Amino acid sequence: MATKAYILIKVKAGKGKPVLSALKSIAGVEQIHACFGQPDIFVFINVADERALSDVVITRIHAIEGVEETDTHIVAET
Image (cartoon, rainbow, N blue to C red):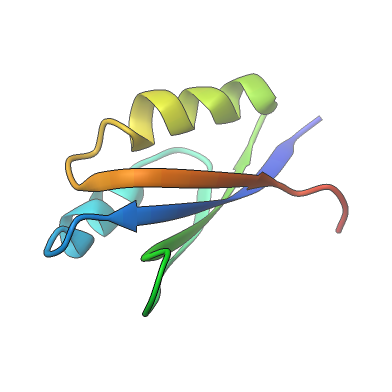
């Protein structure tokens, strides 16, 4: 069963555009929104399962230069 989640991302000052660009290349990312305030970026992702979600967050997103912190919210019901 697919896993959908919102990933809230805090970014270092001045790194927003490079982080946005890197996020666009991640499979499963359906929406990316840069916002005023904290967090800086909201991502909506749709992946195969929670293991895939964990891999994306830990291996891909945390490896992007400028990402300081993430907060992941798995969708419970739509």
